[in-house]
Image 1 (cartoon, rainbow, N blue to C red):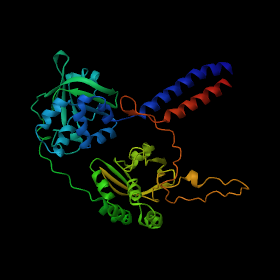
Image 2 (tube, rainbow, N blue to C red):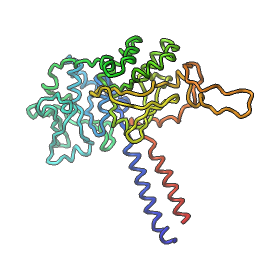
Image 3 (cartoon, rainbow, N blue to C red):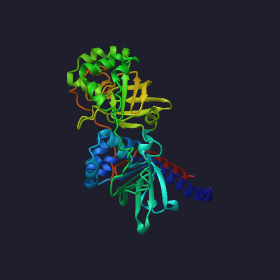
Image 4 (cartoon, rainbow, N blue to C red):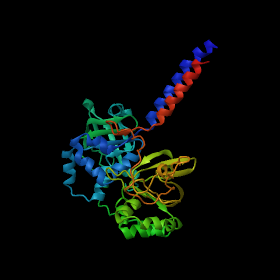
Length: 404
């Protein structure tokens, strides 16, 4: 039926191309640290976003606007000698939980708008003190001021630093925004006792190993900025101890750190962000990464040695979440990989293949790595590979239509 083929082909091709475009767009993730790293005039601002852990929180959000301060503006803010926790509140006032590109700034309805900030989102801002007033002024200028600042607009828009429409916008403003509430002294948050939490929930053996090696200090240092822990239960650790005892002290440390991700990942986040993740053990050439996958409600953690399954949640109190898993995560850097351990034996050969084993072998040659993830582009955006599947489907469908 040539007429039908001719009619269907353009529509089908257009549909799949649109699907491909959509899949590549929605799979992008921004990285504020990488964006600002390309602009040395914001190095101080970038540094404090990192040490206050605001950078990680910005990266977790899908729609965000960062009001960036250059080094001179940051110097005037630092002259106030605020504590780090108070400074975090002030900087969070400079992060809007809505998207404002340079074009949108000059198209504000009625010339003024209120936007909530991350300071408001934390629940620490009293009343409406976590809102920012954005006003389109005469002469093409746009002013910014805290809602509780008696209507004063402390800063004006300078330039657009980077924009990824409806995902992240980074705009430079002239001065820090003043807010008595944000600058109020802030006490250090109460510390979560990670090992105590795990010990009470069936993970005491793992917690004891963290304490014995000193690895617990690294885990605790990462809690404020976001931490995900995968904890093998007591029976799993007890069964693994013969292998664990064969490791050197350094190898034990890396193995334990391999069970932590330096970012908060809820169950929903794990399900929607499948792929390779770095761990607390990741260090330069030592990748110490694994792959998160899910099949419906089941989430698995796949190394090249074993595949573990998440069996429950011990604690979920952002920025900390602790999961129970049914196996010890064994990195390829310390243990023989499945591909090596389970290599098929040659038929009728005098030399038998090495029996399947995943015993510690730090000196074993590394397997060829999976295809490297695409490097971040100039805007600090990493794309996933979902578009490749669509392109394959597009090719198959075009071929099928042409054969009709």
